Length: 527
View (cartoon, rainbow, N blue to C red):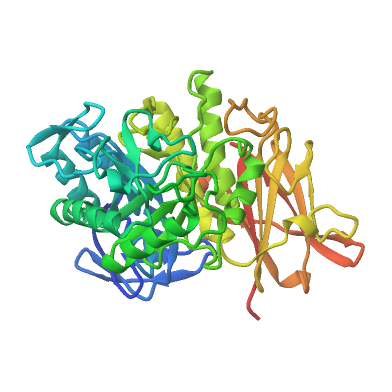
């Protein structure tokens, strides 16, 4: 009988034992395996396993038989603090029928943070008191279902993060705190809300009282602080020009000081304000992506421009591929390739969530519901990304000066162009080196005409690539490869050849591309 896991959460903290049970199967070994292949064995006693000393990262938890056969596997995240380096999803359906379905999907995604979107009754007074209330758009929200969602997320280790607009108030309220345009009109989002001054102490006091009370009563673990990408040239009630970057900074500092333990993220819409420091920890950097950053190759630069002196801390992009009115196969391919691209760039992404849904619009309620077979494809690609994500977060990215130049230390030969950036019509190659490893990731983007996350993507045509790498002491290196579409994406040994190089010898291997994404991991063996 195949073993079944029981009680395995999505997220754990470093120093916290990973304790779980299993049902069925003759289990002889329990271990955690990192993306680099390092093993952390556990103890077995009376149908229960205990694994300690696991470092931060996203890992595979394995149960094996006495003969070494894999009986069952699950992915788990271990973090120094809850919400660090998040695996992010969204939820925006709050009714008794949908919440259980959403919880099952979000757990399958192995989410560690879930942004709960548009749960508020009004912008100025977000906490709905009735059992059933309506938001400003008239959408029905079941308060008890919302609480069930929040508690369910906590149950599998995820942080429920409340969507919380930074500058939104109901029209006509708190007029002395509003911002104004240069023609004297109130800054607003249509007739839906007025834009407040995020630097005003009076607004801080109001916001913290209203949203803090809601978070405490409903059980949220933090806030996603949303902005709208503007105002860019606002004035206060006295007509004095406002420096919006400084006002946002004052707001973020006020929230951090008042709520030191909440997980915070601040939306730098399309990188605005640029080079902005995120809230102090626990927090992560977050940027919503819009044109002209409408190509995969723009994403790395967008995040670099967004990053302030604080450096990366679980950098995440929110991307809404507007492709679902096209061929569904091409649309789905664009969405899953977008996650693959960001993973290879060492960045997280928000696309998936709710009940088997994908984002397509900044109003998250207007999402795309995936068909059952599409949802399974998403899970396959998403879990492959999780399995490999740590490989792109540690070490030095050498792609731009190692790949295929005249003095190339790494050569990738394929029937298509191979590029160190994600462009259409090519294989995107990423090289990350540590002292003892060389990671080479290959992603087939040949089905994309112009490398855009805003257009559908046809199937790729690359089936394999030959990879060679210049390394010291070629006889001491081994190779493992993870191939999407083969062996459930797990790493398995790959035979290496020794081939000539202009500086001596290189190791070389044929890397198959079955479903469009493969990751080669070269490792120098211990003496």
